[in-house]
Image (cartoon, rainbow, N blue to C red):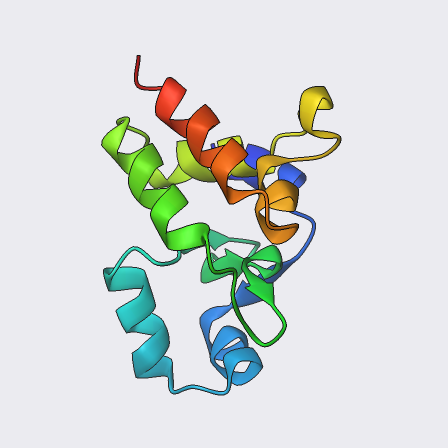
Length: 118
């Protein structure tokens, strides 16, 4: 699954780079992962825990991401499946669900995510 993810996600941030981007400690990054505010997976030749760079917007984590992750997890999605869903292009969205979240279209994406559990 991770190799498919590596093809879907254009840019990855290793956790130390994410901490620098957010101007927080690495401990805070680990807290964000533990709280399920972000999802980190092991990618690349060195198998380093990283997050999609698209999770970051204007120096912070995309506001609607944590709730969307919650909805998808409640629908039974694994971390990998959740990331594939967020980054798979959808013609009806003119991009990916992650693109829509970054554009502030939280309600539409959450509605779609909730529908997955039916």
